[in-house]
Image (tube, rainbow, N blue to C red; front, side):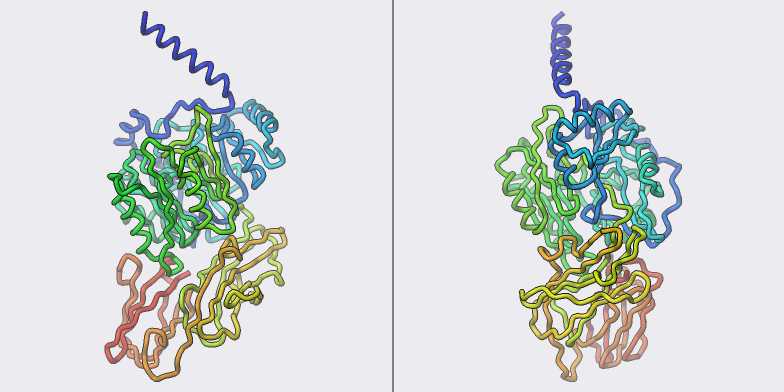
Length: 558
């Protein structure tokens, strides 16, 4: 009888609480794999209906690239005030299970201050509100079309979540490509330039694959040529990278931090050092930003944020570290609007392993104005004129506005001035800086506009956080240094040229894993290296002259 009373009491509390929050999801499933799912994962294989890869070359779309909307689910897993904030920034696409849910959601949103001009619903069967984990990964394929890459969702008792991407791709009128890999969105981040990062959960959940075969698959479907598979420092079963790390830009990463007394301290520092010592696709080292996330009995899920165009939505939970987290984002992302989001809902409160990023998913803009550029960075040797190159594509199908293709630049913090981008054929453009002097400090960003009304900059935020380089003059003395060996064009497409004042004795080219991919012992002062069969990325060039002196260069293959 006592047991019956306890169960009845629990049932009353549950019913009453749910009745008070009918718009919030009463989850059947945990964010973590259930005990049943953990057992099934040991014997469960990927879907066998995977597709052929997209037409190459393929580029994965990063979260911080231009987006056309954001996807959430209803009943909600996020506070309605976040829905409202999102609706005034972009289009909010809501997954509902029934048409009735759609009507109920819209009524509730309208009464809660949501901008209904920016809300629409898709009737898509789904099991949970973790749209990040089963939602689409976007790519730009070789036909200049945005597509969706699917995978086997690593939750075997949630078939509707796993199948949802098929319906989402159809609703977005995008091609869908399914990889033969078991994965989850919370354990994946990419930079749009061929680098991605996940924890080693990918290896343990795909025991029939090796790291090499996984790289081969992700290269074919996502254009990934540098897949960083990292040990998880969080020491929690979920092992999702968004619980402790986040790409903020191509060369910026945010990593959680714990006190020195924490048993996980060395693991966190190790992964931060891995990034600090690694080269980005732009050829520089990562700028590693830290945010204090002690977790344990405190809710500090600060890396579990959402970047959406020029806004960053950061989960906060009323702890003493909230303000420092906001300041970390402001320091790392000047020019962005940082929006703290608290969630006091009893049923969907933030957790250290499940917060805002897990329950939302950015949607790529199929008509985005796409800019790809390998920036001039660091200290560069230049004569009086320097050239930069960019790839610009208007996926809207509308023509680019020729007089609005510009490079904005300033010298030594002076006034901003412009130089035009000139067409070099196809989607390739060039611009030149004139009259640069030794020791000049140069800031710049690219601006483009098309007739669809889209305007984009590179880097995305433009003047608040421009690219930066320093001019170093080149002497005319007759001596060989690494600075007087010319390597051009850089970035290159099909080939690059090495020109040396003294005869080159040998050239060796290595990829970032240290694998030798090219070598020659040709005795020439100029050498052409064919790169047409190389994948996009950074390569290290070792040049030896006839006197045995060794010099090193980096080259970027587009």
